[in-house]
Image 1 (cartoon, one colour):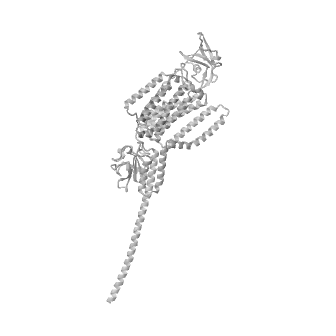
Image 2 (cartoon, helix red, strand yellow):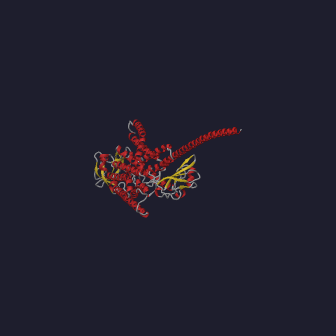
Length: 635
């Protein structure tokens, strides 16, 4: 309840969601980051073209002059027979990493039916031949990690159908096409035992449809819980079934061609297209006010989904584009998917942090956002530095280049820190930052206020206007014996509560703790007759002078229904402290003026008394003279 005291309501729900999200994230990243070993992957090139036929055999259709098969005397029409129980045969079939100096023997069946053993010394060919191929894999993994961590945080802080659909949809964007060669080259035995894991991961693409139908609301609109669950199960099951049908069998298909040939990119593109259509449908059904707030976020999300579809197209056309753009057929797909992921994350971040379409209520302030972004940049540059080091470690200039790279990395990080903060402010917190600056100016000017009316306007009207709060009310009391009376308010009507009882739990808590309080339980903290809806008080801040509670400010939610975030609470507390100081100065000034007024009255009274005393003395003298004259006449 208190911002610094007891834990907020439903903490166990968020803790459970956070545990599940972090567990799934750790499992996912722990499974995919080992694919960096593909940088060291070299496959065997036999110098043949052919097609796989039944029983782990490959029919040679063409022989490269001077290649391994040509040197071994193999001709078109010969059939190479592979044994899936022999590791050497996996290497010769280009499924496993080929060590330096490797030599293998295969049975050969000639067209005339005769058999022989052929000793092959294959060429050692890098799986990622060009620098851009390796950098593309690293960038894809880094961006994928950023996306999964960001949406895991979102599912933790705001668990709902929408946020969990977004999180599972991000998992479906895992670069499994890179993971499969790693698994075949370094891990797999005679089969793909973890294929079901990949199938389930990829099948989570269906949750993007649920995200499109629910964004920016917490659940799918217009469908019952049973309908939502049934649709999710059917969609998930359908994609798992399709994945099982498209399972690549070693020694039956080429390891780098099975996905493009068997339709994975096509099914992925259809899933993303349905999610995009659902998102546009939700946008059309939104109110004009929601459209105005969501248009830029919707544009970015739509553009990113279209970019994902383009990346799938490059997967299909990879062999065509590989020669012109890179050495690997998937490099173009990685770059486009990485850019699409960045746009997608920034669009969601824009909607959540700037437009506040989701009440995230981060447990930490914006400083943590700066730290997270800075950490991501540091990790990315460090990984890139490691990648470049791996590329040059065998060169004679390795030591010098490593030193230059380390110095360059330090300079980049030093220069990037200010740019990161500025970029975050401009992209995500520009409006919020301007409002904070305005409130800081108001806080700085408060000590120079000369009337209680100006102080009340500063702590009621300014936060309402700058932070887009739905309501604000100031309750003030003249002494400890009387209730706190509503002195100034916005978003409150005449019939709403006009006072706070000094014996209420809210007033006694604020008097005891002297700190801001989130009003989670309206029955416990608030009196009857407060505004409802977004104007319902969500935050209470005390104004304390010399350990005495003089006033209480009640703030409502934002006009879009989200609660004040921790940074805003800190600003409002600073404003209340400045108001308390200013109020004390105003009271002291007022007392001084009253003292001066009283002193002037006393001085005037004393002056009047002096005149009266002088007049009295004159009258006494006159009476004495007259009395003396009367006595002389009598004598």
